[in-house]
Image (cartoon, rainbow, N blue to C red; front, side, top):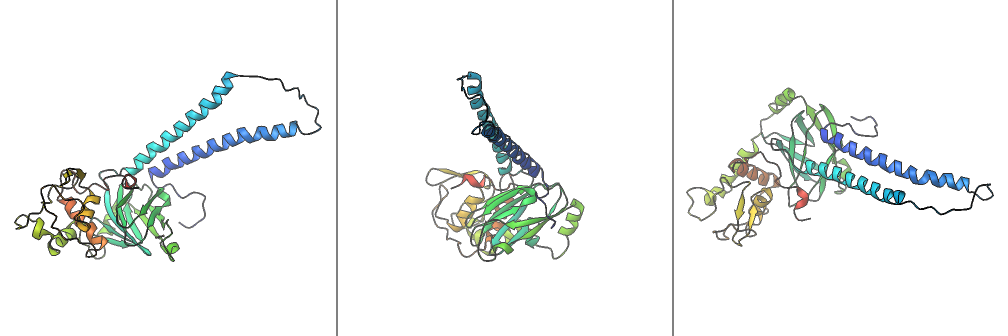
Length: 325
Ligand code: CUA
């Protein structure tokens, strides 16, 4: 894990695909540098002062050359753009069957929790061959979750969720870095990702103190914090029921509709007056400052687990970059 190498190991399919794009870009850049600079060097030697060469300078014109050096670079640029765009969209959409891991960044550590309840700090254990999707937020400033061996890097931002996914293929240990300067100990906000054979991973999951599954922890919070008092079936208050809600579109009092995704649930807990469900009053108190980021994620995991057809298996429902940048 620590010997010097020019490139990190390619430990996921995306890493290979990204490297191919990178090498292609480098090769094309080197090729065109050579096309420009080698003739410059050649001609400056050939036509140096005092050399005996033909300097009569006859005019020639060629449509073929003119259109060629316009069209060929254009096609190359469009090709590279398309290649990059296809890769980008592939990386922005987490596959549906992913293992879910919640990540909270804070000065200066990573706190992670698996859907089964297992918690880790600055370490992430994952099975080889399974897709892993991270839902991430920060407790203080902007951090960035960077695993060079998977070529994945994503900002972790206070007040919103961002996502990142990867499919590790090679068992081993890989670096985990914070890639956004976040204060004095930024450089020590590091850790490791341990990719294990699936059997070893199952064993690992079942060692140590068993954690509470995130959805179960969320259900407990839902009762303990009084959410069920209003949103429960037998409530005196007129509050929207939350079963079968996750992942669907939700009509608002303003006449708009929003997708009931993680962003919407988070805002509804912390800023309940922001998007009032159609047919309901603005009576919910804000839970800002009363729940930790982990607890909010657990509540959302619970609401996903009682959610609609697209149960708790979806990652971030939209590419992070499409919301409010
Ligand atoms: Cu966290 Cu840099």
